[in-house]
Image (tube, rainbow, N blue to C red; front, top):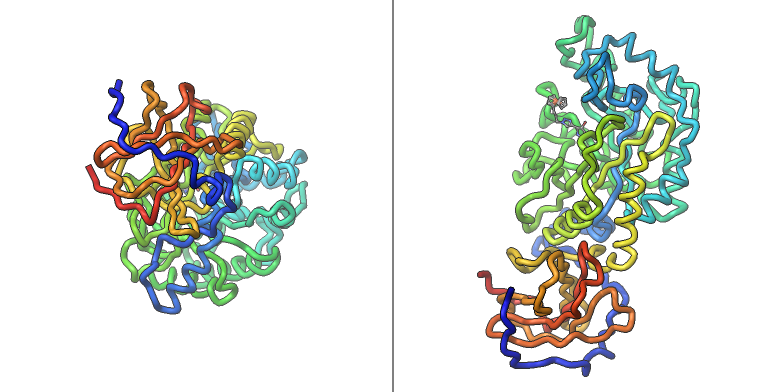
Length: 469
Ligand code: H79
């Protein structure tokens, strides 16, 4: 337990009326590319504005693979890769098309669940690697209109998202195990590659991308995947990237359109490669990277698509802290749900979305529109920040471990404090702040308002001047 520090300066309530604890959210400036002056960079900042503010989105992996629900011939560890991992012949896999009938699908319900969790955008698989399309495409019959369901999932979700103020975004796989022109052939299939033409496939891909960008209203993000295949080249990536830009320059494009992704860590650092943001998969970078936008995508259990055997759910506590951790490093969190074949979110997902939503209802201000922490690390939790208009920076101190002695030590900060309070305190009662050498010490109430992550606001004069320990 820490000993009580000497209190040198106690800052009291005098300045509260100026700032208030629920001041309107300042528009978050971008932390990235601030020094860049080219038109392209300005466009980039303008394009990324809503996405940087959003910080939190829902990933949805849904398709034919929800029907086997992870199981094939006794093996229960499959998921959206099942056609590949169980080496299922085309004709057998394609029988799933006539079985796909998610009668409980309710776009409005899904979107309301995401919104209640505090999510601001939805990325859903318009097509995964198996090639099956959840939308009504003029360029293939391997789509939702060939199922008994015959309802354009993309259309219903796009409309519901718009109604509830979320951005709709498409995950669209470059790799395609179904299309006859896609190459290479998989080792587990019999189809001859003779006559196959990847350029023809690329035209098909672009035709579908055009459908996705023009038939459903404004789209937030084109989230490509499968670019690691040897047949997909940097030139192909550039071509697809500029094709999307040409249709709608406001659409944000992930870095998997091109070949610059550094493995699952997901970041593109070489500017010759296209992509508006990096895509760490199932991991959170150790630190943020100044000037680089990124989004961690992650499953709630161990599979992206629905797997009815997978009970390895991350706890709500774990997910809420991950959201704070990611925001403290300047990233976005794209959290996945794999709906069932009947069209429902699995109950453990619903529980977790609700718990996150309860936390976000109180603490969302400490996530949305925030910038990365000025501290390299903090022993008790994380920090996010916002520049307020009046020469003041608001630090959001995400306290995971509530100090037993009631003293929250904010180390190595030169700025004078203006004011501190609990974000959950609607009365804005000020907390005493004292300087102890190069640290600020905030006196907290005895009990944490939230055992998972209690946010303490600390407003300081100017921009943070932090000495690293
Ligand atoms: O859509 C989700 C995954 O299906 C996809 N990206 C996320 C967003 C993804 N593609 N590849 N990977 C993830 C990693 C590839 C892992 C592989 Fe494997 C190892 C492919 C083959 C061996 C995992 C294990 C998949 C099949 C067996």
